[in-house]
Image (cartoon, rainbow, N blue to C red; front, side):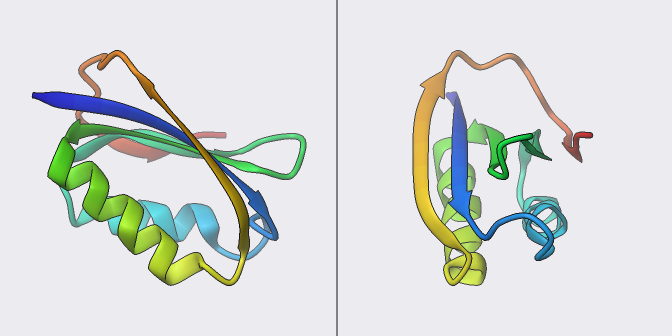
Length: 89
């Protein structure tokens, strides 16, 4: 059963390769969604897929970017059927 998570990362998360890193991590998993910079300096990551896949991506993002993340806020959403992951502009 797929899930959808929207995570907002705050800290020094823009200009450090955060989006490219998320895209690279997601490419190794069966997830859809997107990552994008927001005007307030935060980064939004939306992931959709099986729970284990989404959790694996989130764990790796934390592991690789932990020095840049000061705060992370997550919320669940209804799945929309996203199958591809992209960097949104």
